[in-house]
Length: 349
Image (cartoon, rainbow, N blue to C red):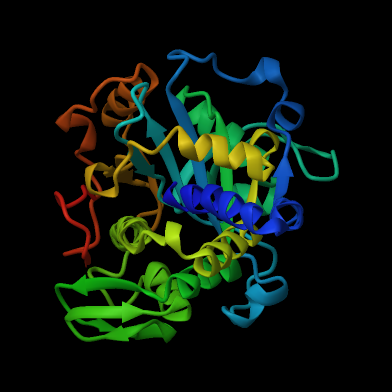
């Protein structure tokens, strides 16, 4: 979200220097987009409950294609939603709540159309992160909407290479670990304490599963949430508005990493949306894991804890404070999490 403020300033500053139209065209041309209403069908979506609240689905894609393949040498074909967060921004736009959806959650995938227009049939008990690889981002949006009953206003996807480039454009992000990260199964090896991570190591950090905490996917979510807050705080701390070169570097890296819904697929639209979020501060952002329980058939998978999740979705749908009972996930996982250098309360996990 703070990235958007940098994009806005980049256009203003560089435009004043006489190169604004080229910059606008170049940065807008970086962005890929998906028309959600066309892909999903406007009649198949939940109604908007609170008009001025916003719900943004943020995905981190683990595609091995192109430059991404150099960053992850796994044998997995295609792409999956390695990270998924539904970010709710209340009507007043002064705070935000990010709900992480564990990628190993067993869900019902609704009938969808893939990128070629072919029908992908409904399927039950499929892993959440497989929806992306089979049917694309619009089907992930449809799955989340049916799971939550919440209308997703916007969708943003960041890929491996774009994430790395954005961190490097910032000059790194600082995180603090309560315990060592052992580097098991090719992961990142770090001692307990504070570290400044470059783009490559940041990608390894947010994807670490084995070698930290209990080695679960649920544990990894805590690392991802806290890195997100550290990264947003780094962007805010740098206050790059007076540095046109850094602004352009951030904007170029940020837009190259993006696929969005069609309503956000221009620099103007992103800038307008970003300006509406100026009151949201990383230190006040609440992070929650979708409440899940271990599956009784396959203990390596989780299912939605319906009682708690229903409370969570109802609160967000109606723009209300999330009750403490809705944050109590029966399957917790993770062990102690990493702490960002950002001020404010520790996020929930």
